[in-house]
Amino acid sequence: MISGRFVYRGLAALLAAGTALPVSGGAGTALAAATPTVLTPPAPAPRPASRSTPDPASDPVPLDDLVPGVPPGPAQPWQIDTPDQALPPKVYTPGAAEDAVEPRDAAPGTYDLIEYVPLGDAVTKAACTKRTGPYQRQVERWLKLKVDGRQSASDCRTIRAFQIAYRIEPASGFAGPVTWSTMMLVSAGRNPNAAGKCPVRSYRVACVDLDRQLTWVQKNSKVVFGPVPMRSGGKGHLTRKGWHTVYWRHKNHVSTLYGQPMPYAQFFDGGQAFHAVYGSIRTTAGSMGCVNLRLADARTLWGVLKKGDHVYVWGRRPGT
Image (cartoon, rainbow, N blue to C red):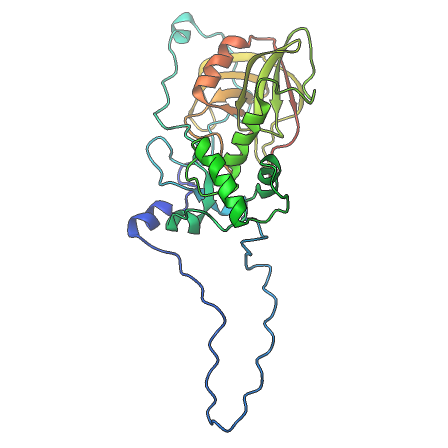
C-alpha cells in the first residue's frame, strides 16, 4: 500500500479548523455613475457560464473530486491503494502450522457504508445536496425517477431515503459510488445470474461481474456463495477478463510488492487473486488488478473454492 496517498485530501484538517467553503455571490454590483446627468449604457447580457464552472444541476462531480463524507478513523484510513500482488507469487505448499493461523480480524467499522461526496458538502455537512453525483442516471433509473442526469430537490429526498434505509452515511442524497454499489447488491438478490452472463456449468464457477462489481460462485444454476460486493482493478491495472483457474491458495499471503497482508488469497491469473483487504472496498479507485473482498466474505469464499476451480470474469468496472 502506498503511504501518504489519502482520498480525503485534507478533509480532517478542514473539519478540525471549522473552515467553511467560500460562498460565491451573484452578479457584481454596478458602479454608480460619476455624474447623475450622464446616462449609463445598459449592461451587456451575461456571458454563458464556462464549462469549467460546475453546474450543480447538470454537471456530475468527477469521481476524483470526491472525499469520504465522514472524518477518517482508525478503521477507515481512506487510502486508495491496495496491497495487491503485481507479479505471480512464489508458489509453495504451506505447512500445517502456517495454515492453522487465521488472519487477524478487521477493526469494527472497517466496511461501513461511507459515501463519497463533494468536498463542499463534506465540510458544510449538507443535509440534502444540490450537486449531481457521478452515478446520477444509474441511481435515478434504479429508483424509477425521471432519468435526466440532473439532481433535483425531489431526487435528493428520494436518494436520501434509500441511504437512510441502508445505513449509508452521510445520507445527503448524493448519488455516489457507495449508493450505486449498494443498489447493485440489493438488485442482484438471490439470482445474480438472471441475465445469464456467467456460464452455467456442472462444476463450480466463480463469477466476477465487473459491470456491477459483484462476485459469486455457482454450480449448475445454483448459487453456492454470494453475491457479495467486490473491488476490481482500476485504470491501468484492469482485472483480466475471460476464463481462469485457481492455481494457488495462501491463507496468510503478504504482498511482495507492498509488504501488506492479502488474507485468504486465491490466485487465478498471474498476480491476480481473490483476497480480503483491511479497508473499504467501495472506493472511487480500483484495485491493482485483484478482486478485493471484505474479510468475512474472503474467509467464506476460502471454504468454497478449491485449487483447480474455474473463474469467469466479464464486463467493465465503471470509470475505467
